[in-house]
Image (cartoon, rainbow, N blue to C red; front, side, top):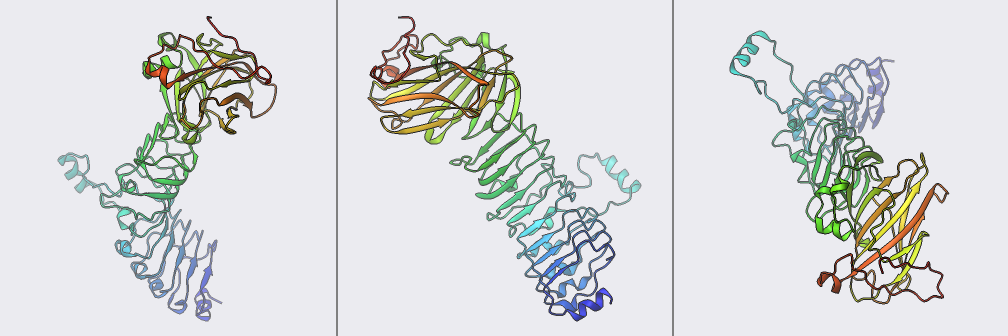
Length: 480
């Protein structure tokens, strides 16, 4: 029984899956299967041509031509399919052009074209050429075959767009290419783009956004609201920002983006010499000059990348947990003006004044060579029965058997700690093993009245301690 005869016997057929049929060279007449809704021809490696009669299958909702590597074009009648919603042509590496009328297919919602070359879709033949080179090219070089163009897509209707590994550059998107505001899924992975193309900056929300293995990607700015964000293995990516009023409120996976220095609303990494001097003074660092030449190992928990760099400040917006600045440097040199100290990974104090302006903590720790590092700083307002568990965006990794000092500067909201509140600060080791050692934890508090009066950090303040009956460490005041 021939393939064509079988189709005649199946006039009411709605689903046809002929995937991996390597003997099919051309599809037969579709007039006998007008009820067909799903046509799957995935990996039909010898398929060269689709019959024009496909336009007669007016009920087609899905066409899957993935990995039909010899297919060179889609028939013009293809554009007459009025209810087609899904078209998959990924891996059709010999497909040289799309029908121009395809942009009128307003029913199309899902378009996958991974692996096709749209790199020259917005270029002209004489681009960047002198007039002599242009004229010589006309008489000496055969005309090039038509190029695949994104201008052929009905971009206003598409809600799922996958253009991974399509040789897309910054200028590959036509000027009038504007995706629908309803776009839900966008995949631009494995493309040499450097920035987010302008045609995507008008989006308000995307459910899933993938930008994996974009080796030239440098910045992503004015991003919309994203529910699931993948930016894996983009080694040159330095900055991610969102539209005004938006921040990252999603699952984010910037794995192996080792140069990522800023995710707005999450973290920002700044060399210590570029930080505001007043802010470094608040952290107890009055002179940053000696620290410029010191190199540390800094591990980023968001990118899972470790870098060897100079001393940096790590700024974080912890939303309900307050705003935090962390600075890591080697050794156990704790600024002398810290007023509460404990040699065990826990201490307690009572908030004395009405408005706590900011709080500094300093933790001296050690990790055995070759071991992982992951710990929390826990603030427990025992009076209000409120806890904040915080792990920094970055960790300083000690070299060998040396200690690492972690300074953190907290800007708390007024409702986090009030006058008379008893607060406990402790370190929680996630792995709960003996490879992580805390030598010392110290705290310094500044209140609004003192900040307004310009109290110098070196002048100690009296901190009210909990009653002696409580099992808290003894405090040692420094410098009298």
